[in-house]
Amino acid sequence: MDAPPHEAAASAARQEAARLTAMDVHGVALTYVDNAGITRVKAVPTARLAHAAQWGVGMSPVFDVYLSDDSAVTSAHIGGPDGDLRLFPDLGRLTVLAAQPGWAWAPADRFEQDGAPYAACQRGFARRMAERAARSGLGLRMGYETEWVVTHAAEAGGGADGPQDAARARRYAGPGPAYGMTRVIGLSGYVRDVLKALADQDVEVLQIHPEYSPGQFEISTAPSDPVAAADEVVLVRETIRAVSAHHGLHATFAPVVEHGAVGNGAHLHLSLRKDGGNLFRGGDGPLGMTRTGEAFLAGVLRALPALLAVTSPHPAGYLRLAPSMWAGVFQCWGPENREAALRFIPGPAREPQAANAEIKCIDATANPYLVAGAVIAAGLDGIDRKDTLPPPVSGDPAVTRAAVPRLPAGLPEALEHFRGSALLREALGDALYEAFLAVREGEQARLRHHGPEALVADLRHHY
Image (cartoon, rainbow, N blue to C red):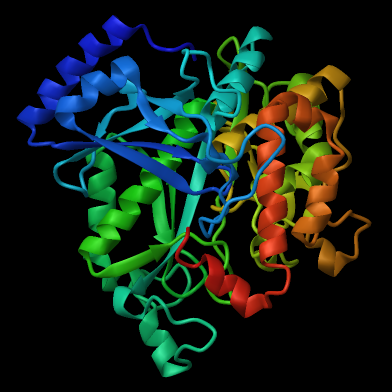
């Protein structure tokens, strides 16, 4: 994205500010997601929105080398106290926040002081990769699943030394079996308010249901273009947090909330389009894919060991990535196979546009813009190479003993693959690549002596 024309942006923002003021909105939160997967914010009064749209809002680039605990590392291109950036709100995504009265939100693009695009802007990276696909006549439709666990706010801090047995059951809101209606009944007002807030914000929800773990829910939203999909998952999470607070509850999207329990994923669904058609249907490739669609997925599958550093970038995420937990830890694909890292969903025969693929080895410590861009880069590389998919896998490889590679079992191994990926370095660019790697290495070093319980406690309130 080029820097917005100053006068045109200011004029549009003045109109938006007048609309917001008439709605009693007094503050606008401008957000971006950093390399630790944390959503950072600068807020402006509504009356200053036009100024922000014309000149941007200052913020240090050092946050690109912040870790999840707000300590900082440094990298070859980014780090230290020097420099400043300008955050420009995307007025096309400006949203009045239904669960935060008096507030609006807009995602921000980041630029240098002279107006040049900031090389390490994660949202800009996702846009560049989507534009790279578009130059080949290809379009992506993406949608993230959001899983979270709800606890009673007063007991949200219970961890390794917290209450157990009956007290543990009280800590989680909405007791009841996995996928059980009793959990929806127990939290019907809460679930209703989540749905209402999202509807008021024009977020199209496809479904919501209780998930496997105590107090766990999942929501799926309609697919969109890659940047809009990443924007939307940020908005969905912050809306859920706000609704939870209004109900005296605490929502956590951390990949592991309790060691040994099923964790929270952030699975990505995607389809590849050309000339209005879905390239995952109507071809002579596996399960009716076109050869281009097959090559895209084959490229993603081949790159998964390196992609895992992007999709599951916190050491604790690997406590979730266990076999036989439907987390997708095997480097394989299969139709409707929830143990495969790449699940292919053919969809009903009467709905050719419904065919899509799901990447399962993703959690909410990942930056969704980096996930989107990296997946597109891997898929386009597969097309360039004319990659083909191996035979599909059925069943649980941990049970069937199928000769299927296991994805990295820890962040150090994933980072080895990431360091060796010329594909991801080229796609991200040196500044973003080096900053991301420095953060991941810093997070690993900071937590290298933590046991499982300490790892879980470390991230519970950060995500």
